[in-house]
Every structure is written in C-alpha cells, then in structure tokens.
Length: 345
Ligand SMILES: [Zn+2]
Image (spheres, rainbow, N blue to C red):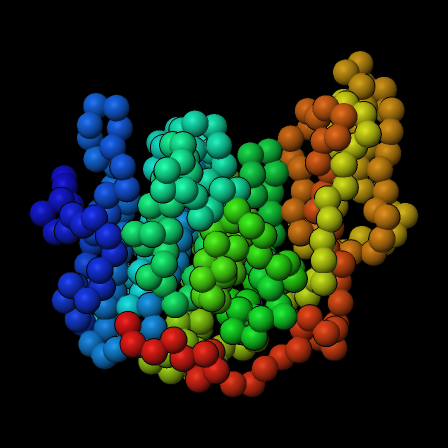
C-alpha cells in the first residue's frame, strides 16, 4: 500500500504550479535527518478553477494533538475543487518529529508554538519553524490552526482569537465552537506569527490529546465548511441552525499551592460560581489536605485530568463570560471575503 505515486515532492508551497480544479497531495521538504533522509510535510491542496484566497488549515503543531487530522480528511472527502475559488491548503502534521514520538514538543524538546516565526540561522526547532513559515504559512490569506489540550488535560471545543480584529473575529464566530476566548495573538505562536504578516488567524482547540473524538471532529468540520463558504473559497451554502457559543473576554488558569493527588470537580463547559469548590487535594496517604475554589464566576474551558500534581499544578482553565454587547464581541454583518479581499491566489 502506497500513496507515493500520486504525491508531488516540492521544496515550497507553489499553488500556481498545481492543476486547477483538482486535489493535489504534496510532500514539502522542510529539513533532513542525520542519515540525510528528507523530512517532508504531508500537505493536501484543493485548488479551485477561479482565482481567490488561499485558506490554510494546520494540524499537529504539537505532535500529540491530532484531532485536526481527521477533520482535514473529512473536509477534503466532500470538496469539489471544480466549483471552488482560490485554494484550501491543509498541513496534516506540522511537527513531524513530535508526531512520530506521540509528543507535544519538537525533537530538541522545544515547543514549536513558542518560537514562531523561527530563525533562518537558528537551532533545530528555530530553523524548522522558520522554514515552515517561509515555505508554507506565508502563502496563506487565512489560517485556522488546530490544537487540543496538552497531555494530562482535557479541553472543550474552543477558539482563541483576537476578537478586536474584524476578519479574525468573523472566522471565530463562523466556526461556532462551544466557547470563544478573546486572546490577542502572542509572539511565538503560529497564530501570532501569521497575524504579524497581516493574515487573519485563529486557534481551534479540539478536545483532548492523542484521541480522535467524533463529536468534536464533526462540529469542527461543520464550522470549517461555514468559514470556507463565507470566505468565498467554496460556494455559498444555506446557513445551518446556529449553535450556542459562550463568549469569554479573558481566561485564566487556577493552580494548586501544594503537591498531592488532585480531583477536579466540574466538567468542561460547566459554569461555576465565585467561591464554588472546584478541586480537592489529598496527600499520598489519602488525607484531604486542601480545597480550591473558583475566584470568580466563569465557564470551564479546560481542566486537568491527571491527579498527580506538584505545587503549582494546573487545576482548571476558567473563562470570564461576557455578553455580545461586550466591546470585544461586536458582531459584523459583512462577509470576510467582502470585508478583507486578499486578492488573487
Ligand atoms: Zn497545542
């Protein structure tokens, strides 16, 4: 069994070189291992017949965060590039060494999502990040970067986005996740590096690491289909019944102040009240030694499920819930395609 006969080997994403109206499979070279074998990113491109924006979707920047991969598979299964504009580019695995090792980090134990856009003269991870930005991500006009919770934690289906940027906010709303958290793009993340190039960009957090979770995969897929249509890449579609999305103006983690065995009480997407006990800690002999309460009202975006914690262990990730009237969450009516036409492909 091999897919190699239908795969193009490229040094850089070059959409103009791909056949219009077709789906292409690429392996884009990003470096070499010590034996001199090329490391190649697996990439799917659906190029439309007409010019239009290049929509980028990325998965597994953290190598154990894999729910985005089946989202891409299923998205491409139902695409018809004959009636598309521009292109949809999907990088199935960004962090190749991490994916091989079922690990979040890159091969040198560094976090790729803390050192974007990398350096052309940098160390292993910096060079890899720079090449990813230079050879792939800079060609995008939009980006949805798909992650999950980290090892030992679970997440809701939520989006992190700078909701004060109109085109970025539009993508976040169209994805219709369970929760949207306003979060300006930080330096070092792929989302931040891409935003610094002027490209609307959001992070989509899809549940838990090292799992394929059908319910979240299906909801992410429906959201991405809506976004692609809204950006003009795929034909207009009838809007589905809107789903409920909780809006958060900010979020913060609650931590333990002691080591021990932790139980976190609420589930993801649960609402908690200020003062409500959300976690209990026992010592190794089974005696209760501490309880932890929410400091404010909020929604549980993510939580720890690993009971074994040192002092400062993460308990839960609490979002500050606000209404649509909040200044960060002004709804716009114009489509992204019309409001921010990136022009050409
Ligand atoms: Zn991640």
